[in-house]
Structures are given as C-alpha cells and as structure tokens.
Length: 155
Image 1 (cartoon, rainbow, N blue to C red):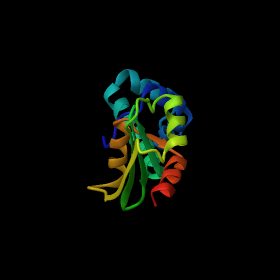
Image 2 (spheres, rainbow, N blue to C red):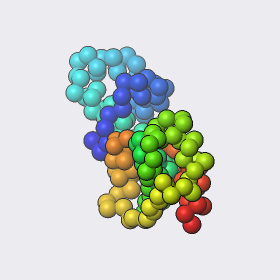
Image 3 (spheres, rainbow, N blue to C red):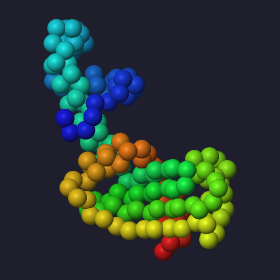
C-alpha cells in the first residue's frame, strides 16, 4: 500500500465511487458481501487498492497546503517539480489557531513581531508521497488564497 487506508467516514462518503470501483472488477453487492464475510483479507486488499487510487487522485490535484500552529503558519505551493514554502512566525502573545489571533495577523503582518521565511525545494523523491506526508503531519489542502496573499507581501 502506497498511502493509508481511507477512514470509515471517508469510505462512507465515497460509497458510490467504491461501488463503481468494485464494478470495474466485476464485483457486485452480493459478491462483495460474500467476500467481506468469507475472505476478509481479500476485502482488505480491495479497500487498500481503492484507497491508493483515491489518494493518488487527490494528491495529484493538490496545489496548496496550509499548516497552522499557535505561533507559526506554514504555507505550501505544490508545483510539479518543487514545493514552495512560506513560513510566518509571530512573536506576540496571540494564538494563530483562534479567530482573534488570525485576524490580528492579517491586520498586523507588517509588525516587527511578524517574520517571514520563504524558499523552494525540489521533491526528494516523488511529489505525491511528499504531499501525503505533509497532510499526515497536520497540513490541510487549501485553495491557495493565503499563500497568494503572503507571496505578494514578501515579493
């Protein structure tokens, strides 16, 4: 398995897609029920295979990630050959995980209490596994608006 198995909630939300996936392998509902009860190992393999297909699709379409902590925001732009990163660090008694802290940052980003770092890095190995690793470490897929906002500021 290249990534990780989808959660129960993710499988439930992708119920229709999973049914179509099984259908491409000529597995109908009745046969799937039989496989689950009589051959749980095969059922697990099918779920793992589907999970990898879903993750690969999601990761290929991912262009931006964000990771928030109380004093730091990491913004990533995931290009084909490299990843761009903007780090925003706040040296003030605020919590960027709260609405008040986040609003303070957007209004005071020119403050001496806010510092920026930025850089680019080629992917060490493959693009998608590196993006997956960032997601597993707490990053969220985003629309890139925050990255674009701060990229203009530091350019």
